[in-house]
Length: 210
Image 1 (cartoon, rainbow, N blue to C red):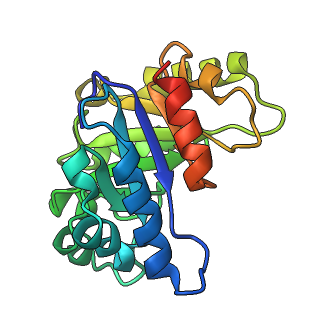
Image 2 (image 1 turned 135 degrees about the horizontal axis):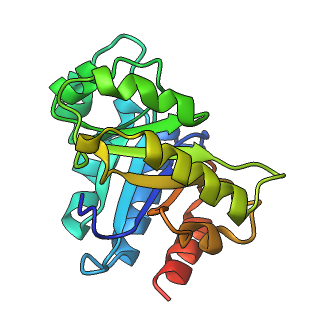
């Protein structure tokens, strides 16, 4: 991931289709592959359930268009190797997950935190760097760009020196009509969307690209 470029991260394949979730992931990933320009100055992290990653890497080669494939959650059995073997490069994780194991598998960590206190635990994880750690925090119906900016500053202020250049994302919903404004807050490098749909993501990317 080029940390100098803004990042949009999103999950797909979280609903069933007539032909099953694997086909659902494939069709969404293939659709993105047909729309994305690999020369856009934007990191696009596209995530699916660990066992379905191959649907967007082998069947639809999203990496060929510059997108970054990842896992939308950590495997319950701790089998991170399946993510690597299926072409995944990042994992959406929570502070309670085994971050050291994720890093040891040469995977990047997209860490979704609840508050700035979750940052303290990062100091004890060997191998984490600004290149393999991205942090996201959520906004809700009472959030605004000012409160989001304050949270980003708190997180930044608690990062140890070795992680000080890690990207910080706002995790929001498409119910927020001003997502582009959130992505341009000082100290914020982009967005994480957990309720993505193909059309909504494309529309958002087009807005971000101006």
